[in-house]
Image 1 (cartoon, one colour):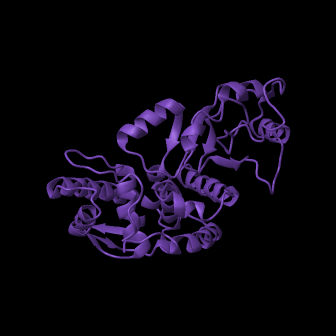
Image 2 (cartoon, one colour; image 1 turned 30 degrees about the vertical axis):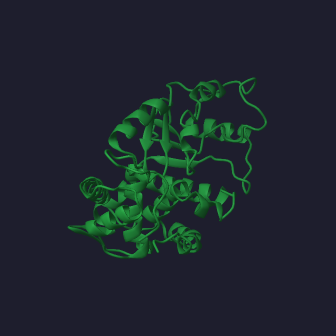
Image 3 (cartoon, rainbow, N blue to C red; image 1 turned 120 degrees about the vertical axis):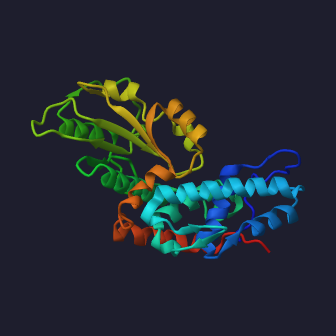
Length: 307
């Protein structure tokens, strides 16, 4: 199995572990190492590593994990790579589920910080891949919507003026004021994807989402972006747009609700982002699949393993 992630704190009379990291560790061990994992395997490691001293409490954690992994697989549907019984068994290679493998590995950057740091601090390619993955997910979820990437990258350094002009042209909205609401360093002002459903009449007042795609472990710092207070001054929308936010982590129900409220946004965590797999296991383009696999291969080879 993969090495224990961070957050596996000593638990004596009650659970003191990070369950998000725990669930990802078990799921990743099955998918990335292509090995069958039993509850007793996990309990043995937890006891040997002194995470738990009480076997009954350790089994309680494992039972929680089995329920969570099963729930995740139900949500993914036909794209599920794990069969859940008394054992967790791999049904697909990770290369056959590149979207899930990619999101899981992005989460691992927090659970395995030394591993992540060994690949440097350039997150441009990671961010570009995640934006494209989010775009293709939304295209599958909303097939009659237009999903347009607007985000700034070093290879396509459109300034904010260009982005605003392009949005006005696409949406037929009226121009607002650029000053004093932005700075030369604003880049895309927190906007990565513009998602809208146009009507044949070409008029304003359409369903409109302005989305931030946050691929890194600092995603919580971006929850209030894009800032609609700024965007509704840059563009005089006939009806206010709605925010949307995507990130690669799988959140518990309570955390999902709390985060939706903080962001005040349509929220896509890992489970929602991968939901097109329930309808079509091959919704990701071949080009993006190949790019993700190339990005993942050297990283997965270096993941820590249990001795």
